[in-house]
Amino acid sequence: MDFSPELSLFVKLGDLAFIAVVAMTLGGALTAVLARQVIHAVLGLVLSLTGVAGLYAFLGNNFIAAMQILIYVGAVCISMVFAVMLSRPPAEEKRSSLREATKIALGLLVAFFTASAIGGALIKKHWTAASESISLGTTGEVGEALLTRNILAFELISLVLLVAIVGSVIIARRGRGSPASAGGEEL
Amino acid sequence: MIQPQYFGSLEVYLFIALALFTLGLYGLISRPGLIAMLISVELILNAAGLNFMAFNRFLIADKTTGATFTLFIMGLAAAEAAIALSIAVAVYRYRHSIIADELSEMKD
View 1 (cartoon, rainbow over the protein chains, first blue to last red):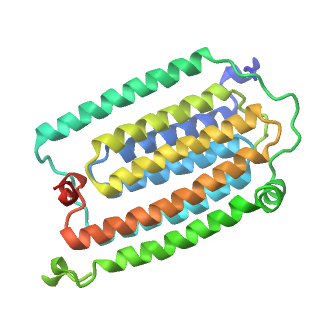
View 2 (cartoon, rainbow over the protein chains, first blue to last red):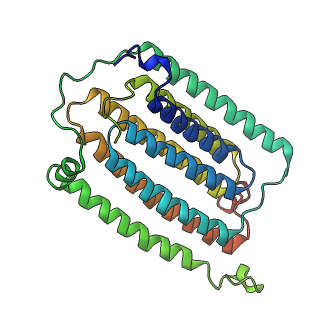
């Protein structure tokens, strides 16, 4: 679990790859949170989620890394881009700057206290590793677990996705023909 | 292919996930737009998934457990994103604005 001496030399290519992946994750998350334009925030989210996929690959599970890219980057972020194009969000210009400053200060305060509480707990805690692995988490093993032990959750999440798709179609259609769209702003 | 035993420290992954969670929490509180808030929620969910995968990799004997949890988090996040984005589009059609502070009819 601890670093062997040759890893601390910082010359291995894998180290550089890990640093790049972590920088992608955190830099993308910073862009997603701080960008003024929403489309830039979506692009930062794409970068951050791709970095998390790289972290999943470093954790030894390539299947989850592929699913992360397929589901998050391929589906969620693309639908966000569609929503941005359909809703034309404002560039968040400086309106009512006192209120904005209050929200930013409150966010910083909550984020700082949460980070210090969890970080302090992380520093103090020491975990004990499992004695031996009984499975490696390969794609076949994950699929077998999904279709045997976790079959109920697997079916339930397909039901949840079906309900979410139907519900989102119904919700997104409801605004059509409303009084607000009568002013020639038909989408 | 990356070796499974390569970069081995649970705390590194936990601190990366903590940074993601904290950034998402800050964005959720400070951003005014609905889509920007949804982006922050996605960051928080990713931090949770990364925690599951890291604990699963280092502490759990059965390596399929964390992968299953992370897959379900991804599925729920996709469903939640679909619902929230359709609500944002519907609200924009009705109000021509998706600033969360201005959506206050239900308070009165």
